[in-house]
Length: 240
Image (cartoon, rainbow, N blue to C red):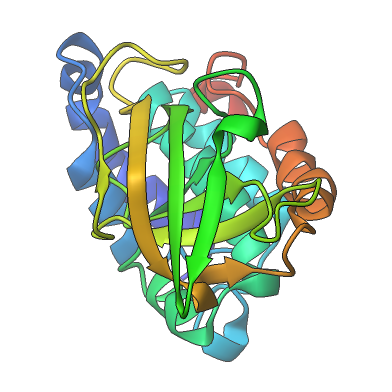
């Protein structure tokens, strides 16, 4: 089914009926995210080699635009997910990419420290285990996503940034509260705390200290093109 046809069905059957409650009660749109996954829209930009839609930034931008006019919170979740997936397509494992492709995995970004810069976001390795210490703010779908593309200082202590894929069920990871973070009501934006969180050393995405290049060349490129839900056109306008 063409992605626009699939999206039209999800909009009418799930997203639109729940949009008001999502906003007024700040209720995370779990049903909408699940429906998007079942329709193949969470895996829209994953390679066909692992079962994804094989489409790109243009189509992802279209989806976020259309969803934003009905439910800005769901659009914000998709925006962060698609930007995370763009990086995971380059450095993520085939296993996680397959999970995303079939709609069973929601990812998000945890790149902004709740404090003065990356110096407060440390990574310490002991054998095959890495301990991450940080508080990340304005994380969309905090406590709801299945994984976080997470930034820290390099393991070797040098200058730069390293990225990791942190599973939501990693030991030591928690959402301490639900303050109003940046983003539309209901998108689940909040602080995520690692004090520390323990992950396998193999969860590193790319090379140690090379994360900033990935953020600038991939993640920020996608975020710059994917519309902010507060500025996207309405669904009725975008469908014309």
